[in-house]
Image 1 (cartoon, rainbow, N blue to C red):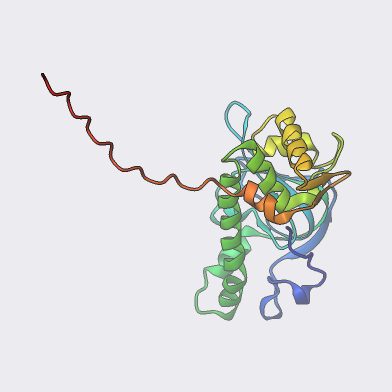
Image 2: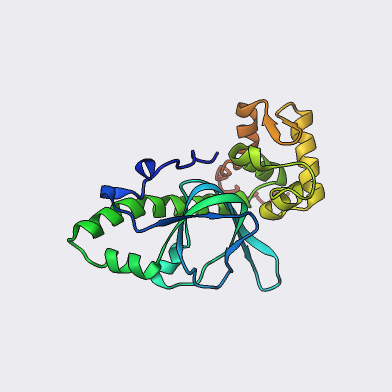
Amino acid sequence: MFEKPVDSCASCPLHAGGRCAFVPRKVRAGERLWSQGEVPPEVMFVQSGTVALTATDAEGGHWWNGVRGPRSLLGVEAIQGKPARARAEVVTDASLCSADPALLRTQMGAPGTPAASELSSALVPLLLEELDRRSDETQGRSGTALSRVARFILEHSELVASGQRGPFSKRHVASMLGIRPETMSRSLATLTNDGLITVGRHITIEDRARLELVASPPRALVEKSPRRRRKAPRSE
């Protein structure tokens, strides 16, 4: 589930000590913020709206995808001048706050000053949360197709829309999870028939406890004891 949108600077985690290096602006759906392999021109904080991250391999196949909502920090690679791991594209109208990476480097590179302390206190928790999300998303592409779909629904049920033109159509979500669209449809049908979800314009969770069981990664196999060596038959 996404965090609540930030409705004012006073409630923003970046508004430390009454100062903020980030400047707000409105962005329309469909705008690309940066491409994979490009150093992000800005570090972005999402106040409201949704941003999709998509990484492809040399053959054009999706190997990592993510969805970011309010209170997410994007383009953190730019602070070190590194290229982005994924393309960032706004999929619903959004309010984003941007900061110049060079300015952030300068402020954070002045240890002992109030500005550096305040900025670090604001950014570090957001950076750690982003690392956790990326780790979870990597795990989200593991396991059976049914478990992947269940995990995505638990996190983002409101995003899976019917039809093919929505920003998060079933085909789009299938691509994110590394499965075929027809496999996505079969998984949704299975979860619906089992009474775990209802599929309409969006997905409604009917039985969260059981859905969590389906989404859970398989337990580690119990280490088997060494096989006993078979005794050679006695010669008569």
